[in-house]
Image (cartoon, rainbow, N blue to C red; front, side, top):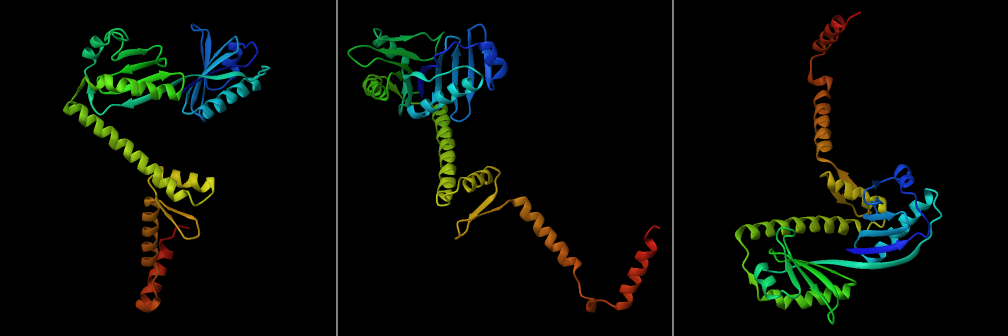
Length: 278
């Protein structure tokens, strides 16, 4: 996750942004307005001085696109905005060790750089200083580690630095932790498999509308097949069942007069005419 910062080069009236803008929340106690975007999914903190921080992007290019969209949204509200001083402030990375960690013993061994306050935070805060790249790591007993650094290279260096340190304090996971981890991996594997199947079937279509139709059909549980002419045939189970019932009813209603006596048919028509209200 990338954290970016930029400026719009003008004074901003937070009250006007809160009243006229969309997807905004005015936090008066903090003196800022938060604005959210759906594509890309990010959140911006806006101050009256024109300084804006953008969080939630998954790449540097996505962070820059989101920052430009925020500046454009403010420009549409009547502010003379410019896109200035964009830079990546921090990068957040996560990893999971293949074992659990004895964080109490780890914090006691590395008291110079590690601090553990279970009343405030469930993990150990480990800070790397010079000459190592500056980074802050959160180490949890489940084996999960989050790293905050200035760049991706610093995040990788921090993981390589912390791995041999936590290796000495590894422990076996409990049965509950193993079950929870397996469920999480199963859910992630199912979601990735569904996404890959949709992407593989829609890759050869070359049409974003067809791709969207295929994805929507998958979401509602419809049966999707692709023909040789690169067209999508979506057949929903309920619709198929209704069509089959309708065809059966039509077949039952369709009969030939040769199968019945003509006199019986005439009597049926006369009875129907008598039953009709005038």
